[in-house]
Picture (cartoon, rainbow, N blue to C red):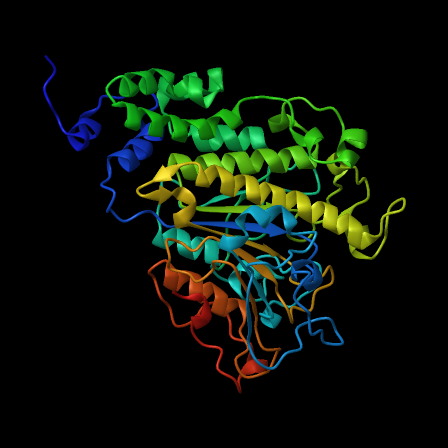
Length: 458
């Protein structure tokens, strides 16, 4: 007769094999009491070439537009998203509208503007000459340490790029990598958790589930039905990392007609395949417990922003589109909407995966905050008066981001906020408050731009 041992004792003493490092975080989450604090997680999704305020604005909410295109209101606008119609570009997030907040009107003039603000987008400083300081993703990574403090994934304008340095930094002159080859990122992130013969086995067999199979069987046999089901939910995240045909042909009529027929998306030269694979890797990294901070950078940084979205039937580069060039009968605005919708579909897919994994009395999505923004603020040639952002998830109730549209007072008006204020808000929600972040905008010295945005804090 087997001794009656507690779940905690079992998980602490379970003898694992080659997949120990990868499986241990999952077992730790299963063994934690439902009242235990849940990990806080952040995902930053950056897209190059600007995020137009009109594409962020809900269709059913009128926009007071400045002659230069940015916010033109004197007092804070706070509207519930319930019952509002999202823009065509952001409509793939409709299923998460009650968890979504759209923030308009924050400035980032200190970053400089132009084609890309590089490290400044996440650092709230001028990053034109390189990494001048830490960025918000790395600041949060220090506060929420994981096996990997932060994982940077993305694509550039060239399929042959393996690693680039473009948006993330640990400090001055300390840029952090953005991995651009899904197959190599997969091997590095998951294969590096093993050592010696185990690592050789991982590299040889390639499939993460195969690599962990013996340990999964051993642990599952000692679990009750509910615990076994939960473990199955966690492991399901890795099924998307198996080599398989691209799902992109299901996205749209355009893609079905013009999209290439591709094989393994982890080795594909098609940019949409590569980004799709990177979102899979990011989701699995979070669910596996390898990190609490993921940054996904799509064609960000100078000179990496001229991506051609051939997988979406758009052979024209984004630089030309940013200059107003259309294709066939589609305008530049319609083309950017198609591309942005693809990114929103990826975010919705990521959120759905996190929502499917139970955590305590809720799901992983309950304790995660996904931020979407552009590295070049409001336009292709940005001036950074307006830096639209989407915030999905309230970080376990620490943020007031459930179904809201917030538009800050215009640049220079009382109550105006900057991206630095937003980043301070995230740090406050993560439990590591600061008085300042990045570099203050000297042109705003006559108004108070210190501290977090109180309207976003619970």
